[in-house]
Image (cartoon, rainbow over all chains, first blue to last red; front, side):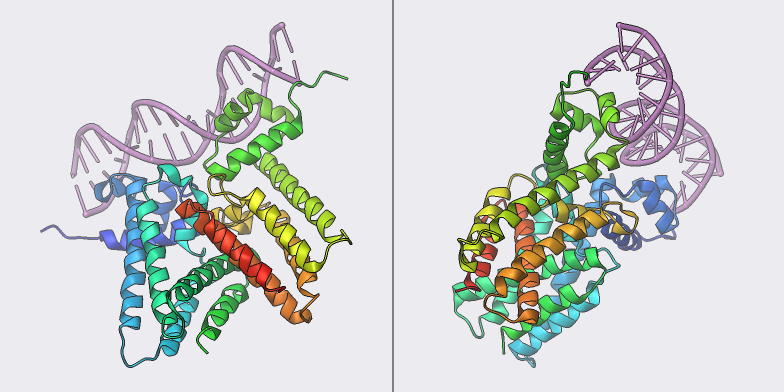
Length: 185
Length: 185
DNA sequence: GTCTATATGCGGATAGAC
DNA sequence: GTCTATCCGCATATAGAC
């Protein structure tokens, strides 16, 4: 076994930060290597190409959200309302006006998705968010209403992240999260 | 006066379609010239550079929205509820899952706005939207509540446009518009 | 106003030594 | 696993004829 100086996962995590703030197309391999402290060519030891790297980034983010949120909603010591509050904290912690917003939404809006290999991962991400929120709303609403509230909440949050980035003000996301919380009062 | 074969405004309108669907960074001058039916070099007769062209595109869109929405809310023959319904129709007409979504939001999420010359125009666009909706909500709500509902509605709509693009399904935007309408029942 | 030709640099990606 | 060197194509932009 050779010594690993720079791990693949470390590069993916660093690349995440760059893609999230600069966008996919506008991020060059040179940008990435500078931020990761490695050479341009070294990316091609780990990844087939830039698209392949981006795919790994998106999958890592998806996996991170799934793991964290599953842990949360499967915690039987919490009520639905408390779980929703924990989700609020989770979003507040992960999104901030100067860290580039939601890489999933960014990628949707930046790319003409028809030819995109990122589509499946991004859809999966949002479907998981829908399902998670719906589960919580089902404690007080019937099926179709819970589904609608889940979708409306995600829309409110994602629109809020966009405005948060535009105005460099976290309040838009915060307000969306507060509105969600009120739905389980 | 020389004969004008391709008008500047025509190019800006065509460029709008391309930028909206392909994104700013990913759109090349060659993409634009192909779609406009002119030569690469001809862009530089009308515009200083690509950024300059994009700025004109964003300003045209902003102006279009301002003109249309002002006409609508200043029409004294309509009630606030009817005006809101007209705004709903206006959004339904202008946004569709296969036309690229909202170029303003796309540009916010695609670019690291700190160095962006587009910032002022985009902020202006959203502030006008806020003000327009707030005005309508003021018919039934007090000031701070009307402001919150205006912001929440824009967030819902913009998040809806994102999901609309992702799932190629207009329902997310439609639902957001319906929810807005219900606020004036 | 519109064209051809082209300068110039950057981007993604590869070859191959160590 | 990491490096240097480099290929190649595309992108923005300009020069200058018509």
